[in-house]
Length: 202
Length: 374
Image (cartoon, rainbow over all chains, first blue to last red; front, side, top):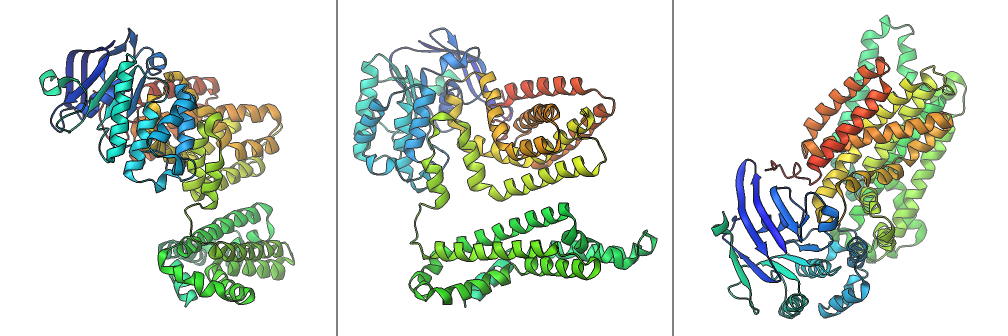
Protein backbone atom coordinates (compact mmCIF):
# COMPACT_ATOMS: atom_id res chain seq x y z
CA UNK A 1 0.00 0.00 0.00
CA UNK A 2 2.64 2.55 1.13
CA UNK A 3 5.95 2.24 -0.68
CA UNK A 4 9.24 4.00 0.03
CA UNK A 5 12.04 3.74 -2.53
CA UNK A 6 15.58 5.09 -2.44
CA UNK A 7 14.77 7.56 0.30
CA UNK A 8 17.58 9.87 1.37
CA UNK A 9 17.32 12.64 3.90
CA UNK A 10 20.14 14.85 5.13
CA UNK A 11 20.35 17.75 7.53
CA UNK A 12 23.24 20.16 6.97
CA UNK A 13 24.92 17.69 4.62
CA UNK A 14 24.68 14.93 7.25
CA UNK A 15 22.80 11.87 6.08
CA UNK A 16 20.25 10.93 8.71
CA UNK A 17 18.05 8.54 6.78
CA UNK A 18 18.65 6.15 3.93
CA UNK A 19 16.11 3.54 2.92
CA UNK A 20 16.42 1.48 -0.26
CA UNK A 21 12.99 -0.12 -0.14
CA UNK A 22 10.33 -0.29 2.52
CA UNK A 23 6.71 -1.32 2.08
CA UNK A 24 3.81 -1.04 4.48
CA UNK A 25 0.62 -3.02 4.05
CA UNK A 26 -2.44 -3.01 6.32
CA UNK A 27 -1.64 -3.39 10.01
CA UNK A 28 0.27 -1.77 12.81
CA UNK A 29 3.96 -1.02 12.28
CA UNK A 30 6.26 -0.15 15.13
CA UNK A 31 9.32 1.80 14.00
CA UNK A 32 12.20 1.19 16.36
CA UNK A 33 15.65 2.69 16.60
CA UNK A 34 18.01 4.58 18.85
CA UNK A 35 17.75 8.33 19.42
CA UNK A 36 18.74 10.13 16.24
CA UNK A 37 18.19 7.08 14.07
CA UNK A 38 15.67 9.01 11.96
CA UNK A 39 12.31 7.67 13.22
CA UNK A 40 10.63 11.07 13.47
CA UNK A 41 12.29 12.20 10.24
CA UNK A 42 10.87 9.17 8.42
CA UNK A 43 7.35 9.88 9.71
CA UNK A 44 7.65 13.56 8.74
CA UNK A 45 8.82 12.61 5.25
CA UNK A 46 5.88 10.23 4.82
CA UNK A 47 3.53 12.95 6.14
CA UNK A 48 4.80 15.44 3.55
CA UNK A 49 6.25 17.77 6.17
CA UNK A 50 9.90 17.31 5.23
CA UNK A 51 11.41 17.24 1.78
CA UNK A 52 13.49 14.22 0.74
CA UNK A 53 15.23 12.53 -2.14
CA UNK A 54 13.62 9.38 -3.52
CA UNK A 55 10.03 8.31 -3.85
CA UNK A 56 7.14 7.79 -1.47
CA UNK A 57 3.81 6.60 -2.86
CA UNK A 58 0.49 5.36 -1.59
CA UNK A 59 -1.30 2.93 -3.94
CA UNK A 60 0.85 4.30 -6.77
CA UNK A 61 -0.03 7.91 -5.93
CA UNK A 62 3.27 9.76 -5.57
CA UNK A 63 3.70 12.23 -2.72
CA UNK A 64 5.95 14.39 -4.88
CA UNK A 65 3.92 14.32 -8.07
CA UNK A 66 0.45 14.43 -6.60
CA UNK A 67 0.58 15.67 -3.00
CA UNK A 68 -3.07 16.68 -3.09
CA UNK A 69 -4.28 13.12 -3.71
CA UNK A 70 -1.67 11.44 -1.52
CA UNK A 71 -2.17 13.61 1.59
CA UNK A 72 -5.94 13.02 1.60
CA UNK A 73 -5.22 9.61 3.06
CA UNK A 74 -2.19 10.19 5.26
CA UNK A 75 -2.52 11.82 8.69
CA UNK A 76 0.15 12.65 11.22
CA UNK A 77 0.47 13.37 14.93
CA UNK A 78 3.68 15.05 16.12
CA UNK A 79 5.69 14.12 19.23
CA UNK A 80 5.33 17.60 20.68
CA UNK A 81 2.52 19.26 18.75
CA UNK A 82 2.63 23.04 18.22
CA UNK A 83 -0.39 25.04 17.09
CA UNK A 84 -1.40 28.74 16.99
CA UNK A 85 -1.96 29.34 20.70
CA UNK A 86 -4.75 31.89 20.33
CA UNK A 87 -7.15 29.39 18.76
CA UNK A 88 -9.48 27.10 20.69
CA UNK A 89 -9.30 23.35 20.25
CA UNK A 90 -12.66 23.33 18.50
CA UNK A 91 -11.59 25.97 16.00
CA UNK A 92 -8.59 23.88 15.10
CA UNK A 93 -10.78 20.78 14.79
CA UNK A 94 -13.16 22.62 12.45
CA UNK A 95 -10.19 23.79 10.41
CA UNK A 96 -8.93 20.19 10.10
CA UNK A 97 -12.44 18.91 9.32
CA UNK A 98 -12.59 21.22 6.34
CA UNK A 99 -9.07 20.54 5.12
CA UNK A 100 -9.16 16.79 5.66
CA UNK A 101 -12.79 16.40 4.64
CA UNK A 102 -13.87 14.78 7.90
CA UNK A 103 -17.19 14.73 9.74
CA UNK A 104 -18.02 16.14 13.14
CA UNK A 105 -19.78 13.04 14.51
CA UNK A 106 -16.69 10.84 14.52
CA UNK A 107 -14.68 13.65 16.13
CA UNK A 108 -17.32 14.18 18.81
CA UNK A 109 -16.92 10.53 19.82
CA UNK A 110 -13.16 11.01 20.20
CA UNK A 111 -13.63 14.23 22.20
CA UNK A 112 -15.94 12.42 24.60
CA UNK A 113 -13.66 9.40 24.90
CA UNK A 114 -10.63 11.56 25.67
CA UNK A 115 -12.64 13.66 28.21
CA UNK A 116 -12.01 16.90 26.38
CA UNK A 117 -15.58 18.26 26.29
CA UNK A 118 -15.21 20.68 29.20
CA UNK A 119 -12.44 22.75 27.63
CA UNK A 120 -12.35 22.05 23.89
CA UNK A 121 -14.82 24.81 22.96
CA UNK A 122 -13.67 27.72 25.04
CA UNK A 123 -10.10 27.64 26.23
CA UNK A 124 -7.38 28.99 23.94
CA UNK A 125 -4.58 26.51 23.25
CA UNK A 126 -2.16 28.74 25.20
CA UNK A 127 -3.81 27.47 28.38
CA UNK A 128 -3.51 23.76 27.44
CA UNK A 129 -1.12 21.46 29.29
CA UNK A 130 1.19 19.23 27.23
CA UNK A 131 -1.14 16.26 27.83
CA UNK A 132 -4.18 18.22 26.62
CA UNK A 133 -2.27 19.29 23.49
CA UNK A 134 -1.20 15.71 22.85
CA UNK A 135 -4.83 14.51 23.09
CA UNK A 136 -5.90 17.24 20.69
CA UNK A 137 -3.15 16.25 18.27
CA UNK A 138 -4.34 12.64 18.37
CA UNK A 139 -7.96 13.65 17.80
CA UNK A 140 -6.86 15.74 14.80
CA UNK A 141 -4.88 12.83 13.37
CA UNK A 142 -7.99 10.65 13.20
CA UNK A 143 -9.98 13.20 11.21
CA UNK A 144 -11.01 12.19 7.68
CA UNK A 145 -10.61 8.38 7.90
CA UNK A 146 -6.91 8.20 7.02
CA UNK A 147 -5.65 5.08 5.23
CA UNK A 148 -2.24 5.65 6.80
CA UNK A 149 -1.96 7.01 10.32
CA UNK A 150 1.45 8.24 11.47
CA UNK A 151 1.86 8.57 15.24
CA UNK A 152 5.16 9.89 16.58
CA UNK A 153 5.54 8.91 20.25
CA UNK A 154 1.76 8.92 20.80
CA UNK A 155 1.90 7.80 24.43
CA UNK A 156 4.10 10.50 25.97
CA UNK A 157 2.33 12.87 28.41
CA UNK A 158 -0.94 10.88 28.18
CA UNK A 159 -2.73 9.65 31.32
CA UNK A 160 -3.74 6.00 31.74
CA UNK A 161 -7.32 6.54 30.60
CA UNK A 162 -6.20 8.34 27.45
CA UNK A 163 -3.67 5.59 26.71
CA UNK A 164 -6.37 2.92 26.79
CA UNK A 165 -8.67 5.06 24.59
CA UNK A 166 -5.85 5.50 22.11
CA UNK A 167 -5.08 1.76 22.09
CA UNK A 168 -8.75 1.00 21.33
CA UNK A 169 -8.74 3.51 18.49
CA UNK A 170 -5.55 2.12 16.98
CA UNK A 171 -6.94 -1.41 17.02
CA UNK A 172 -10.20 -0.15 15.49
CA UNK A 173 -8.26 1.65 12.79
CA UNK A 174 -6.42 -1.57 11.99
CA UNK A 175 -9.61 -3.59 11.87
CA UNK A 176 -10.96 -1.09 9.30
CA UNK A 177 -8.14 -2.20 7.01
CA UNK A 178 -5.83 0.78 7.48
CA UNK A 179 -2.14 1.13 8.29
CA UNK A 180 -0.80 2.63 11.48
CA UNK A 181 2.88 3.49 11.67
CA UNK A 182 4.07 4.55 15.09
CA UNK A 183 7.19 5.15 17.12
CA UNK A 184 7.41 4.58 20.84
CA UNK A 185 10.01 4.13 23.53
CA UNK A 186 7.72 1.79 25.48
CA UNK A 187 8.99 -1.76 25.94
CA UNK A 188 5.80 -3.41 24.90
CA UNK A 189 2.57 -2.47 23.13
CA UNK A 190 -0.77 -4.13 23.93
CA UNK A 191 -1.48 -5.22 20.34
CA UNK A 192 0.41 -7.24 17.76
CA UNK A 193 2.76 -5.15 15.62
CA UNK A 194 5.23 -5.59 12.78
CA UNK A 195 8.51 -4.20 14.03
CA UNK A 196 10.87 -2.27 11.79
CA UNK A 197 14.32 -1.35 13.03
CA UNK A 198 15.62 1.73 11.25
CA UNK A 199 19.22 0.89 12.08
CA UNK A 200 18.83 -2.12 9.77
CA UNK A 201 17.58 0.06 6.92
CA UNK A 202 20.43 2.62 7.00
CA UNK B 1 3.07 54.77 44.67
CA UNK B 2 1.19 53.92 41.46
CA UNK B 3 3.00 56.72 39.67
CA UNK B 4 6.25 55.19 40.79
CA UNK B 5 5.26 51.75 39.55
CA UNK B 6 3.78 52.73 36.20
CA UNK B 7 5.56 55.92 35.13
CA UNK B 8 9.07 55.00 36.25
CA UNK B 9 8.58 51.47 34.95
CA UNK B 10 7.50 52.74 31.54
CA UNK B 11 10.39 55.18 31.10
CA UNK B 12 12.83 52.57 32.38
CA UNK B 13 11.56 49.97 29.93
CA UNK B 14 11.70 52.28 26.94
CA UNK B 15 14.81 54.23 28.01
CA UNK B 16 16.67 53.20 24.85
CA UNK B 17 13.85 54.45 22.62
CA UNK B 18 13.81 57.83 24.40
CA UNK B 19 17.58 58.11 24.26
CA UNK B 20 17.51 57.36 20.54
CA UNK B 21 14.77 59.97 19.91
CA UNK B 22 16.67 62.52 21.99
CA UNK B 23 19.87 61.88 20.01
CA UNK B 24 17.92 62.27 16.77
CA UNK B 25 16.55 65.64 17.84
CA UNK B 26 19.89 66.77 19.25
CA UNK B 27 21.66 65.82 15.99
CA UNK B 28 19.11 67.79 13.99
CA UNK B 29 19.55 70.96 16.03
CA UNK B 30 23.32 70.57 16.10
CA UNK B 31 23.25 70.19 12.34
CA UNK B 32 21.15 73.34 11.99
CA UNK B 33 23.54 75.28 14.19
CA UNK B 34 26.55 74.15 12.18
CA UNK B 35 25.14 74.03 8.67
CA UNK B 36 22.45 76.67 9.09
CA UNK B 37 24.58 79.38 7.54
CA UNK B 38 24.82 77.45 4.27
CA UNK B 39 21.06 76.85 3.97
CA UNK B 40 18.69 79.11 2.05
CA UNK B 41 16.78 80.19 5.17
CA UNK B 42 17.93 81.40 8.56
CA UNK B 43 18.86 79.14 11.48
CA UNK B 44 15.68 80.16 13.27
CA UNK B 45 13.60 79.04 10.30
CA UNK B 46 15.15 75.56 10.33
CA UNK B 47 14.98 75.36 14.13
CA UNK B 48 11.24 75.92 13.99
CA UNK B 49 10.72 74.06 10.70
CA UNK B 50 9.59 70.69 12.11
CA UNK B 51 7.29 72.21 14.73
CA UNK B 52 5.73 74.50 12.13
CA UNK B 53 5.21 71.61 9.73
CA UNK B 54 3.57 69.50 12.45
CA UNK B 55 1.30 72.40 13.36
CA UNK B 56 0.26 73.51 9.88
CA UNK B 57 0.96 71.03 7.03
CA UNK B 58 -1.81 68.39 6.62
CA UNK B 59 0.65 65.63 5.68
CA UNK B 60 2.77 66.31 8.78
CA UNK B 61 -0.32 66.60 10.96
CA UNK B 62 -1.29 63.13 9.70
CA UNK B 63 2.23 61.85 10.42
CA UNK B 64 2.14 63.27 13.92
CA UNK B 65 -1.33 61.77 14.42
CA UNK B 66 -0.05 58.31 13.44
CA UNK B 67 3.10 58.58 15.54
CA UNK B 68 1.20 59.78 18.60
CA UNK B 69 -1.35 56.98 18.12
CA UNK B 70 1.52 54.50 17.99
CA UNK B 71 3.01 55.97 21.18
CA UNK B 72 -0.36 55.87 22.94
CA UNK B 73 -0.90 52.24 21.96
CA UNK B 74 2.59 51.43 23.24
CA UNK B 75 1.93 53.09 26.59
CA UNK B 76 -1.58 51.63 26.86
CA UNK B 77 -0.30 48.10 26.14
CA UNK B 78 2.40 48.56 28.77
CA UNK B 79 -0.07 49.72 31.43
CA UNK B 80 -2.58 46.99 30.57
CA UNK B 81 0.12 44.32 30.76
CA UNK B 82 1.34 45.63 34.10
CA UNK B 83 -2.21 45.68 35.48
CA UNK B 84 -2.58 41.99 34.63
CA UNK B 85 0.58 40.93 36.45
CA UNK B 86 0.28 38.99 39.70
CA UNK B 87 2.32 41.57 41.64
CA UNK B 88 -0.44 44.15 41.09
CA UNK B 89 -3.30 41.83 42.01
CA UNK B 90 -3.73 43.77 45.25
CA UNK B 91 -4.97 46.81 43.29
CA UNK B 92 -8.22 44.94 42.65
CA UNK B 93 -9.18 45.17 46.34
CA UNK B 94 -7.43 48.46 47.20
CA UNK B 95 -7.17 51.04 44.44
CA UNK B 96 -10.21 49.85 42.50
CA UNK B 97 -12.44 50.08 45.56
CA UNK B 98 -11.87 53.87 45.64
CA UNK B 99 -14.44 56.26 44.22
CA UNK B 100 -14.55 56.84 40.45
CA UNK B 101 -13.32 60.45 40.59
CA UNK B 102 -10.36 59.51 42.81
CA UNK B 103 -9.38 56.67 40.43
CA UNK B 104 -9.73 58.88 37.38
CA UNK B 105 -7.55 61.59 38.97
CA UNK B 106 -4.79 59.03 39.56
CA UNK B 107 -5.09 57.68 36.02
CA UNK B 108 -5.03 61.22 34.69
CA UNK B 109 -1.68 61.90 36.37
CA UNK B 110 -0.22 58.56 35.27
CA UNK B 111 -1.40 58.81 31.65
CA UNK B 112 -0.39 62.47 31.40
CA UNK B 113 3.11 61.77 32.74
CA UNK B 114 3.64 58.76 30.51
CA UNK B 115 2.38 60.60 27.43
CA UNK B 116 4.17 63.80 28.36
CA UNK B 117 6.50 63.79 25.30
CA UNK B 118 3.54 63.66 22.90
CA UNK B 119 1.43 66.13 24.87
CA UNK B 120 4.33 68.55 25.26
CA UNK B 121 5.30 68.45 21.59
CA UNK B 122 1.70 68.92 20.36
CA UNK B 123 1.32 72.01 22.63
CA UNK B 124 4.71 73.32 21.57
CA UNK B 125 3.92 72.98 17.82
CA UNK B 126 0.54 74.60 18.34
CA UNK B 127 2.07 77.60 20.14
CA UNK B 128 4.87 77.98 17.56
CA UNK B 129 2.34 77.70 14.70
CA UNK B 130 0.08 80.27 16.35
CA UNK B 131 2.82 82.79 17.17
CA UNK B 132 4.82 82.52 13.94
CA UNK B 133 2.14 81.89 11.32
CA UNK B 134 -0.98 82.85 13.28
CA UNK B 135 -2.57 79.47 12.45
CA UNK B 136 -4.83 77.48 14.76
CA UNK B 137 -4.53 74.14 12.97
CA UNK B 138 -2.16 72.82 15.64
CA UNK B 139 -5.09 72.95 18.09
CA UNK B 140 -6.67 69.96 16.33
CA UNK B 141 -3.57 67.91 17.10
CA UNK B 142 -3.69 68.99 20.73
CA UNK B 143 -7.35 68.02 20.97
CA UNK B 144 -6.64 64.70 19.26
CA UNK B 145 -3.83 63.87 21.72
CA UNK B 146 -5.99 64.85 24.69
CA UNK B 147 -8.80 62.69 23.31
CA UNK B 148 -6.44 59.71 23.05
CA UNK B 149 -5.31 60.28 26.64
CA UNK B 150 -8.91 60.35 27.88
CA UNK B 151 -9.63 57.19 25.94
CA UNK B 152 -6.64 55.52 27.58
CA UNK B 153 -7.85 56.58 31.04
CA UNK B 154 -11.35 55.18 30.52
CA UNK B 155 -9.96 51.98 28.96
CA UNK B 156 -7.44 51.38 31.74
CA UNK B 157 -9.97 51.93 34.49
CA UNK B 158 -12.43 49.58 32.79
CA UNK B 159 -9.85 46.83 32.18
CA UNK B 160 -8.30 47.21 35.62
CA UNK B 161 -11.64 46.64 37.38
CA UNK B 162 -12.30 43.42 35.50
CA UNK B 163 -11.31 40.20 37.27
CA UNK B 164 -8.17 38.57 35.89
CA UNK B 165 -9.12 36.19 33.15
CA UNK B 166 -7.46 34.34 30.33
CA UNK B 167 -10.29 35.45 28.09
CA UNK B 168 -9.01 38.81 26.98
CA UNK B 169 -10.97 40.87 24.51
CA UNK B 170 -8.89 40.02 21.46
CA UNK B 171 -8.82 36.34 22.45
CA UNK B 172 -12.59 36.33 22.58
CA UNK B 173 -12.73 38.03 19.23
CA UNK B 174 -10.36 35.51 17.68
CA UNK B 175 -12.12 32.59 19.36
CA UNK B 176 -15.44 33.78 17.99
CA UNK B 177 -14.15 33.64 14.41
CA UNK B 178 -15.36 30.78 12.34
CA UNK B 179 -12.28 29.51 10.63
CA UNK B 180 -14.11 27.21 8.26
CA UNK B 181 -14.43 29.82 5.59
CA UNK B 182 -10.89 30.93 5.28
CA UNK B 183 -7.66 29.44 6.55
CA UNK B 184 -5.87 32.71 5.79
CA UNK B 185 -7.70 34.30 8.67
CA UNK B 186 -5.35 32.45 11.05
CA UNK B 187 -2.35 34.32 9.65
CA UNK B 188 -4.20 37.63 9.88
CA UNK B 189 -5.41 36.88 13.40
CA UNK B 190 -1.83 36.17 14.44
CA UNK B 191 -0.59 39.45 13.01
CA UNK B 192 -3.29 41.50 14.67
CA UNK B 193 -2.98 39.67 17.97
CA UNK B 194 0.79 39.38 18.31
CA UNK B 195 2.30 41.97 15.94
CA UNK B 196 -0.22 44.81 16.03
CA UNK B 197 2.36 47.56 16.63
CA UNK B 198 4.55 46.38 13.76
CA UNK B 199 1.50 46.22 11.47
CA UNK B 200 0.39 49.75 12.44
CA UNK B 201 3.90 51.14 11.99
CA UNK B 202 4.36 49.48 8.57
CA UNK B 203 0.91 50.60 7.42
CA UNK B 204 1.63 54.17 8.55
CA UNK B 205 4.88 54.25 6.59
CA UNK B 206 3.24 52.70 3.52
CA UNK B 207 0.31 55.13 3.50
CA UNK B 208 2.60 58.11 4.06
CA UNK B 209 4.86 56.96 1.24
CA UNK B 210 1.90 56.69 -1.11
CA UNK B 211 0.58 60.13 -0.15
CA UNK B 212 4.01 61.72 -0.52
CA UNK B 213 4.61 60.07 -3.92
CA UNK B 214 1.18 61.02 -5.22
CA UNK B 215 1.14 64.59 -3.90
CA UNK B 216 4.69 65.78 -3.57
CA UNK B 217 6.48 64.33 -6.59
CA UNK B 218 4.76 66.59 -9.09
CA UNK B 219 3.25 63.81 -11.15
CA UNK B 220 -0.10 63.67 -12.83
CA UNK B 221 -1.86 60.88 -10.93
CA UNK B 222 -4.69 60.80 -13.47
CA UNK B 223 -2.40 59.67 -16.25
CA UNK B 224 -1.10 56.13 -16.49
CA UNK B 225 2.43 56.47 -15.23
CA UNK B 226 3.80 52.92 -15.01
CA UNK B 227 7.11 54.05 -13.58
CA UNK B 228 5.49 55.75 -10.61
CA UNK B 229 3.02 52.92 -10.05
CA UNK B 230 5.75 50.27 -10.12
CA UNK B 231 8.03 52.38 -7.93
CA UNK B 232 5.25 52.90 -5.38
CA UNK B 233 4.35 49.20 -5.37
CA UNK B 234 8.00 48.21 -4.99
CA UNK B 235 8.52 50.57 -2.06
CA UNK B 236 5.32 49.48 -0.31
CA UNK B 237 6.19 45.79 -0.83
CA UNK B 238 9.67 46.43 0.60
CA UNK B 239 8.24 48.02 3.76
CA UNK B 240 5.79 45.11 4.07
CA UNK B 241 8.72 42.67 4.25
CA UNK B 242 8.65 43.18 8.03
CA UNK B 243 5.11 41.78 8.15
CA UNK B 244 5.90 38.98 5.67
CA UNK B 245 8.93 37.93 7.72
CA UNK B 246 6.86 37.75 10.91
CA UNK B 247 4.21 35.79 9.08
CA UNK B 248 6.86 33.38 7.77
CA UNK B 249 8.12 32.77 11.33
CA UNK B 250 4.58 32.14 12.50
CA UNK B 251 3.77 29.72 9.68
CA UNK B 252 7.08 27.89 10.03
CA UNK B 253 6.72 27.49 13.78
CA UNK B 254 2.98 27.16 14.37
CA UNK B 255 1.43 26.03 11.10
CA UNK B 256 3.85 23.28 10.11
CA UNK B 257 1.00 20.81 10.52
CA UNK B 258 -0.73 22.34 7.50
CA UNK B 259 1.95 20.80 5.25
CA UNK B 260 0.09 17.54 5.86
CA UNK B 261 -3.10 18.98 4.32
CA UNK B 262 -4.04 17.78 0.83
CA UNK B 263 -3.19 20.96 -1.06
CA UNK B 264 -1.21 21.11 -4.29
CA UNK B 265 2.04 23.09 -4.42
CA UNK B 266 0.51 25.69 -6.69
CA UNK B 267 -2.47 25.88 -4.31
CA UNK B 268 -0.09 26.66 -1.44
CA UNK B 269 1.59 29.33 -3.57
CA UNK B 270 -1.69 30.99 -4.52
CA UNK B 271 -3.07 30.77 -0.97
CA UNK B 272 -1.07 33.90 -0.18
CA UNK B 273 -3.03 36.07 -2.62
CA UNK B 274 -6.26 36.47 -0.59
CA UNK B 275 -4.09 37.01 2.48
CA UNK B 276 -2.21 39.82 0.72
CA UNK B 277 -5.41 41.34 -0.65
CA UNK B 278 -6.87 41.57 2.85
CA UNK B 279 -3.60 42.66 4.45
CA UNK B 280 -3.13 45.47 1.95
CA UNK B 281 -6.68 46.88 2.20
CA UNK B 282 -5.49 50.26 3.62
CA UNK B 283 -2.99 50.70 0.75
CA UNK B 284 -5.63 49.59 -1.77
CA UNK B 285 -8.07 52.21 -0.43
CA UNK B 286 -5.40 54.93 -0.55
CA UNK B 287 -4.49 53.91 -4.11
CA UNK B 288 -8.11 54.32 -5.23
CA UNK B 289 -8.18 57.77 -3.57
CA UNK B 290 -4.83 58.92 -4.97
CA UNK B 291 -4.79 57.31 -8.43
CA UNK B 292 -7.56 56.68 -10.94
CA UNK B 293 -9.26 53.26 -11.24
CA UNK B 294 -7.10 51.62 -13.92
CA UNK B 295 -3.91 52.90 -12.31
CA UNK B 296 -5.05 51.51 -8.95
CA UNK B 297 -5.70 48.08 -10.44
CA UNK B 298 -2.23 48.07 -12.04
CA UNK B 299 -0.73 49.19 -8.73
CA UNK B 300 -2.49 46.38 -6.81
CA UNK B 301 -1.44 43.68 -9.31
CA UNK B 302 2.17 44.89 -9.26
CA UNK B 303 2.12 45.05 -5.47
CA UNK B 304 0.84 41.44 -5.31
CA UNK B 305 3.63 40.26 -7.61
CA UNK B 306 6.30 42.01 -5.55
CA UNK B 307 4.85 40.64 -2.33
CA UNK B 308 4.88 37.13 -3.80
CA UNK B 309 8.53 37.31 -4.79
CA UNK B 310 9.58 38.82 -1.47
CA UNK B 311 7.66 36.08 0.36
CA UNK B 312 9.34 33.38 -1.74
CA UNK B 313 12.70 35.03 -1.11
CA UNK B 314 12.09 34.89 2.64
CA UNK B 315 11.17 31.19 2.33
CA UNK B 316 14.47 30.59 0.54
CA UNK B 317 16.66 32.55 2.96
CA UNK B 318 14.98 31.50 6.20
CA UNK B 319 15.48 32.95 9.62
CA UNK B 320 18.33 35.32 8.72
CA UNK B 321 16.94 38.89 8.83
CA UNK B 322 20.21 40.61 7.86
CA UNK B 323 20.61 38.44 4.77
CA UNK B 324 16.97 39.12 3.87
CA UNK B 325 17.66 42.85 4.18
CA UNK B 326 20.73 42.62 1.93
CA UNK B 327 18.91 40.60 -0.74
CA UNK B 328 15.91 42.93 -0.54
CA UNK B 329 18.17 45.95 -1.08
CA UNK B 330 19.76 44.33 -4.14
CA UNK B 331 16.33 43.36 -5.48
CA UNK B 332 15.06 46.91 -4.92
CA UNK B 333 17.88 48.55 -6.84
CA UNK B 334 17.90 46.02 -9.68
CA UNK B 335 14.16 46.56 -10.11
CA UNK B 336 14.68 50.35 -10.04
CA UNK B 337 17.30 49.96 -12.74
CA UNK B 338 14.91 47.94 -14.90
CA UNK B 339 12.23 50.56 -14.25
CA UNK B 340 14.51 53.27 -15.62
CA UNK B 341 14.57 51.36 -18.91
CA UNK B 342 10.76 50.95 -18.85
CA UNK B 343 10.97 47.14 -18.70
CA UNK B 344 7.67 46.78 -16.87
CA UNK B 345 6.46 43.49 -18.36
CA UNK B 346 9.89 41.93 -17.95
CA UNK B 347 9.89 42.87 -14.26
CA UNK B 348 6.48 41.27 -13.76
CA UNK B 349 7.26 38.07 -15.68
CA UNK B 350 10.66 37.53 -14.05
CA UNK B 351 9.26 38.27 -10.59
CA UNK B 352 6.41 35.78 -10.99
CA UNK B 353 8.75 33.11 -12.35
CA UNK B 354 11.28 33.54 -9.56
CA UNK B 355 8.54 33.69 -6.94
CA UNK B 356 7.12 30.38 -8.15
CA UNK B 357 10.45 28.58 -8.50
CA UNK B 358 11.75 29.73 -5.13
CA UNK B 359 8.49 28.82 -3.42
CA UNK B 360 8.33 25.34 -4.96
CA UNK B 361 11.85 24.63 -3.71
CA UNK B 362 11.42 26.04 -0.23
CA UNK B 363 7.77 25.87 0.82
CA UNK B 364 8.47 23.32 3.56
CA UNK B 365 10.14 25.93 5.80
CA UNK B 366 13.37 23.96 5.94
CA UNK B 367 15.40 27.14 5.59
CA UNK B 368 13.75 28.32 8.82
CA UNK B 369 15.22 25.41 10.75
CA UNK B 370 18.61 25.95 9.14
CA UNK B 371 18.52 22.59 7.43
CA UNK B 372 19.94 21.89 4.04
CA UNK B 373 17.66 19.82 1.97
CA UNK B 374 18.98 16.41 1.00
